[in-house]
Image 1 (cartoon, rainbow, N blue to C red):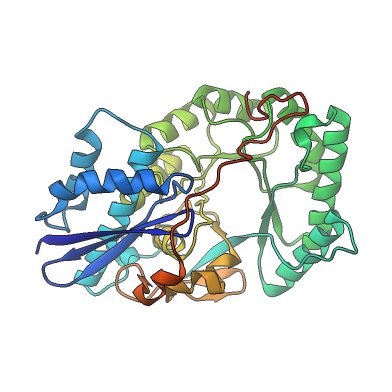
Image 2 (image 1 turned 90 degrees about the horizontal axis):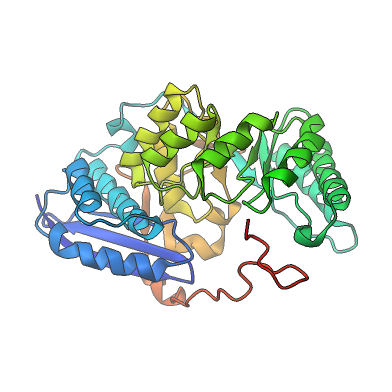
Length: 383
C-alpha cells in the first residue's frame, strides 16, 4: 500500500484539514491546531507532499521522524503540519485494520471520556455577566458535566489596579462555583495574560474556591519561568497548549513538575507524539488534560489518546462540535452528558463532507485587535 494523493482544505478562517488517500482508496483526515496561520500550515504540508507520495502510510513513526529531522527548523507551523499528517495516517491505519485508533494504541483503560466543558450558553442581557455564568454553570451541571472551564478575568484586566483585578475576578469565580456546586470541578483559564507577580496574589485569592487547576498564567516563552511559578502558587497549575514537542514538556516538568500537562494533538506532533508526552507526564506523576476547541477532528484524535493512557484526567470540549457550523464534519462520536463514549468506528470516526465545502469558504483571519493594547498604547501581553 502506498500514499497516492494528498488534498489540503482551508475552511472558514481558522481550519486546515489534510486528507491523505492510498492507492487502495483508503483515506484519512487530520487537522492542525495552529488556527491563526492555517495558510502557513498548508504551505508546509505542500512542501512535504513530494516525500509522502509513494510511502507506506503505516510507517507513521518513520515518516514523522523524517519530516521533523529533515530540516533545521522548528515551531508551531512545522509541528502543526506534522500533527495534521500524523492524525490522517492513524485514521488510515485504523481503517486498514478495521478498528478504532485507540485499539491500536494499546487498547482502552476506560470506557468513557470525562469532559470539561468550555462554559457557554444563552446570554440574558438583563442580568450581569457573573449572574449569566452562575445560571449557565448550573444548567451544564444539570446536563451531567462534572467539570467546567472559564476565563475569569475582566475584559479590561490589563488596565485595572491590583485590588480591582483581584476583587472582580474573585466575584466571577464565586459565581461559577455557586452555579456549578460542590460536585463539579472548576477550571480557571488565564490565557497567558498576566505577569508572575500578578498571578501569585490572584491565585491565592481564588484558592478558597478549590479550582481543579489554574491554566497558562504567563506567556509560554520560558519553561524555567513556568516551573518557578508552579513552585510559588499553591493551587495546581496546567500548561502546554502552545508547546510543540516532547522536549518542551520534559523541560517544563523538570523545572516545576508535577503539573497538569495540556498538549494539543493538533500542535504537539499528532497522536504519535502526544502519546509520548502522556508517558513523560506519567513519569512525573502528572495527569494529562488534552486541549482542544477546534472541532470534531481534533476532539476525536484526542479521545483516542485519552482512552488509552492511565494518567488522563479530563478532555476539553466545546459544544461547538455539535453546531450546524460543524456539520461539515460527519462525526460518529457520541456525547452522553459530560462524557464521550469510546469511538467504535474504524480509524478516527470523523469524515469530511465534501458537499459542504462550498458553504465553508476560506476567509483569512483578521488579526486586527490581537493582542489588546493598554490605555497607554503598549501591548498588554508584552511580559
